[in-house]
Amino acid sequence: MSLLKSVDAKFFHDQIPYKPMGKYAHFLTIRVTESYPLFQTDGELNKARVRAGIEDPTPISRLAMFKRKQSTPERLVGRELLRSYGLVQADECEYNVKFAMNNPDCIIYGFAIGDSGSEKSKVVVDTAFSITSFDESHETFTLNAPFENGTMSKQGEVTSRINQQDHIRPQVFFPSIVTLKDPTEASFLYVFNNILRTRHYGAQTTRTGRIRNELIGVVFADGEITSNLRWTQAIYDCMRAENTLYLTDPLNENDVMTAAKTAITHLMAEEFIVHTDLIGDNFQNLLNEVKQLTGNEDGIKAILQTAMDESKAYFAAYVEKPKKSTAKAGA
Image (cartoon, rainbow, N blue to C red; front, top):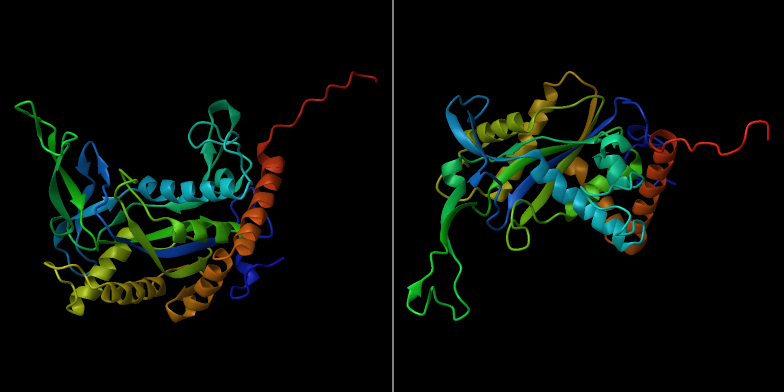
């Protein structure tokens, strides 16, 4: 039974295929920081020295949001939902410890368990970059750990538990394309829902790291599309041309979304692949339908159950090892 009415069924497979079949669904996402998240390696914020725009050759340093910083929180949200609705038991599938291999998380996002088997992720996420430069996108905080009386001293001794840490500022924008290879309708909705629901990314996710995902469109294609970096550079050029690229104040979100839609439309016009773009107004019907489906219990149950059935069928056909016969010869 089809769950979506606003998208042509030709973009989806009836079942999860074993071999790559050349269907791609690209989720066009703008990740907006709403607190002070941390994307770091070895105690320092991740950053890269790159060209400012496609047209603007000025080199700048940009904050970088590595791919696992994006995909891991999203798949954990999906796993939480599967447990919440009783489709996966807590003791049968534990992330990075013991994969059950037969549920949507394992089949769609992949797993590797040594000699027991592996499944390549059908979700492709690459490093995302901030539109603004590193200098305009972060600030340094001094952190302390006071005693229970609220002061930094005890019995005349001052604690040395004081440290400094760079944090990413609120209202920093990371354009990110999340690609789902060979989607079924259920796997498409499963990944879509995970992106919409995920709210925390990066280190210390219980205390900070609040990020909102704004989807501006979906592109169905027979191949991969432009990179996150090139899309970010194109957005930078658009905003610079419209004089909306404020370097001393947070970017205006409406200006960012407008530039993001314009930039991706121009970039898609340069592609050498067959593609159907649902961007801006053309995307609204699909977004509304997905929100209606995922916003009620019957709808989310239907999505999760269908995704679960497809994953179990894939597992039985292509992952599960054949059981050895115990019958005696000639019996």
